[in-house]
Length: 453
Image 1 (cartoon, rainbow, N blue to C red):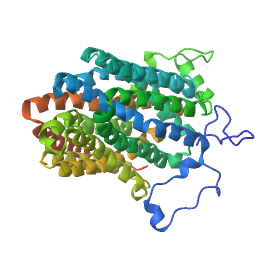
Image 2: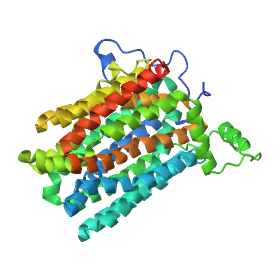
Image 3: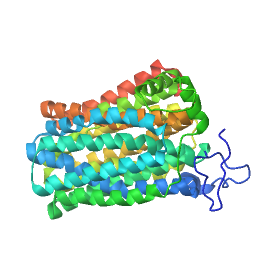
């Protein structure tokens, strides 16, 4: 157990101090009756976590405006889903490089400072997205460059943000904290695409980019008010001595990235949780085909409305799962929960491909969103609890690469397959493959399905 948290006269944790479980007798009483089924909000009692959560809330909608605007602009220029996939895949290299290196940096410097610097970079790229769209440049190459730059900053930001959670809430509240973070992010993924679909015909794409940039200014203010989150001195000293630096100095290098991968291979449950997400996202995330489906298969409903609904359906289901996360967040068989969730995701995605109706497709995507929320909660809990603080940044760096990189590989695969086979066939086959591969993994590695928190 980590050391007890000390406070200053304002009630805030002293800078750099880790948080521990509250002393016995101070925890909130267990929920009874219907309250056991709804979201566990205990992590919001901790002011630093509440501020981190607020910063996520503020930008949840704005970031999704850009997430819809970029593929829409590329499809408008090229009239090709394949180009949407190519552009998304172009962001994978900086995401991988800076996500992995950013995880090392997050273990070596104050995580709050790193979040501030990288949020500034993301805001600048959003302003540049606005400028090129406002100027009407219509350059796919420029869009790809800006997307790659933004993904690099995101890759640096995400490990620091996620690795901070275990320093801000007690260990037994980690699943609840993960559900809170994921739910608010998924809420933005509902409101943002629907808002984008409604606003594109009225104000155009430039306004969407500008709104994202303004929202990031509010995020910077929320992160600025977080307490300092420097590395724990004992962890830094241990890592530095291991690297041949007896004076305790700590430098971020690629040897540290290799240390992170060795750490994963030494902890099989971490490795398998990453593999489960790779299977689900690479073969079962059909978002690159949403513009084509909205433009052709579901065109009678209106292209803008269909596009917004397709992008919003998965997060809508995820939010529903988050609001009712009390039904599963206390489960102890984390490995089994991940397996069931990924299989359910694959089957639901297959249902999307088999649906000729927009509403049935949206319903299956919503079911997939519920499954994704369950998977996120338990994979996140495994990652936060199984890694020590001096490795959490690196683990979150790998997590960022897997979570954000997998869908980009999926964009390339689905965009290409959709152009060759048709969008519905590509979606249905991908979802079925997810279910088959995940069941095969569960049979091949029984220890994962038996893993208990």
